[in-house]
Image 1 (cartoon, rainbow over the protein chains, first blue to last red):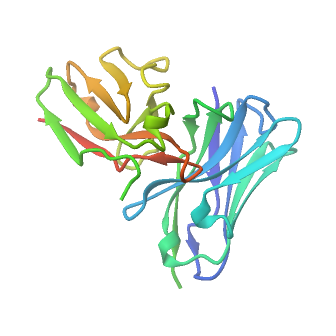
Image 2 (cartoon, rainbow over the protein chains, first blue to last red):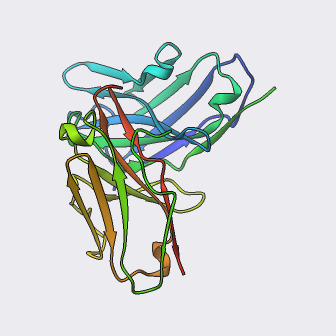
Length: 124
Length: 111
């Protein structure tokens, strides 16, 4: 059974960096048959896929265009986890952030396991 | 405005049948990308309910069924039960955005 455990601060000041970690059990961040994603949910944006990291003989990343200049998703293989960093945050980045696993890297692509979610508020 | 359009709410009495629609475009559902469905209860993460248009993960009862045709998809729930309440989301890939996208969600109320 795959489990994803999220950690990180719930309050971030405007212009600073949002950092969250997702610890994986029951699978490997280096798996050749999974991809590791960050998704956020807010009343104004709904559910929004932010990006992913995955390993297929080398590491790959993909990010959604709306945050591409500010986002970084990185694997941590010794700790079997992956992280999200979102720079220069504004109140519009306030949301519940989820990490999620997807099987494969192409189509069909769906999220079969999710973390518990972290409410991140951007406020001074 | 979500890329995939869902009705904001649907309702039905226990035992009845309801359907939730998900309408896209030629950049997502119409391009042949699969649709997937999630169920979310308040304060919890979405849970995979249907994948690859019409496949149920282990543990999802056969009261739930999915279909897709052209730029639209639908989720049907028969024999409604109180525990079916919550928000339902469709998800697919959008080639114009190069991103995986979700519908705006449909709130199901069991009367």
